[in-house]
Length: 454
Image (cartoon, rainbow, N blue to C red):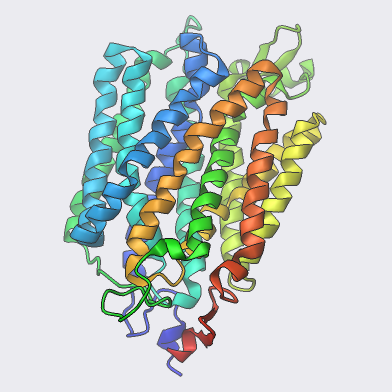
């Protein structure tokens, strides 16, 4: 048995694609950074434009609407242009969206910022539609779920720095204590535009081979009598549904993290003033000290550190345990976390918010890998539908915001609890839907084989 077939970044024909994987992984860092800034933007607009939580959720609406509208065109273009061409188109679209924030700052209207958010999301759609399935073919299929989780770990790194940038440019104050966020919001987005233009140039000259996926379900055009539709495969159809509800839960938790930390944490002791910066604490309506939006933005980076730790440890565990089982267990644990937050148990609930980040970590890439499993040449098309399911992040956070406006943000966590329950159902039942034992050892149409048999 050739050792090449066992390499995590080495294909069965001996190609070493480590550098290509690193390049593609940089895209995950990029959209993690952009998403991280989006997730701390809501509170800025609540304060500057006097919006309710449900109204500020339009930021998520615009963001995920971009994904929904561009997912199918991105999948179609990826099929026509190949992986490299699709990535370059996506990067240039993100650059255009980032530069739009310069005039949007001068327009100073909510709609103008939403246009920029939507445009950047449209570009990120190209990158996600292409990069997610591409990571699964950059080496042995045995390690497909591991590779996509490693790449998504870079996404987690970007998510750590996104809120830090948001804290600096969205919640900054001048010497007189006045907010400067409205004037400086464009700066990180213009920076993103410059970086992605450089990345587009690098990708133009880089080696990005167009590798085909294994065709376990024989969906190839040349297969006589084969099922041509990906919609005949329940493991894919239900992956679209699972991804819809997962992203809905993720978007809601991320979007209202700052609201939770500033309104639901227990009152802070006056002794905290001795080691906290003045802008990190503020007096609430109850006369007690509470965390400020600026410090809560920094804490959001702590949440994403938990997210990143979950990605790295999850990638290791996925080498040893079936991906669908891991998905089911992590989703159930997050149902428990959300219910404990709902019950308003003080600092215990606060800890559960951070734990929810940890257990969300592997869900998106794992659902993706499980959903496109065995679809061969149709993986790019399947990928576009799974990316389209991100629209869940536009719809259900508004429901969570409405509940929070009527009661409080803790009660709003009942929405992600229900979403995680649906994800758990998919994970625990994936083998039945796919007729496969796992993505490591495949059992399709009554035939048992593994990577080492190919």
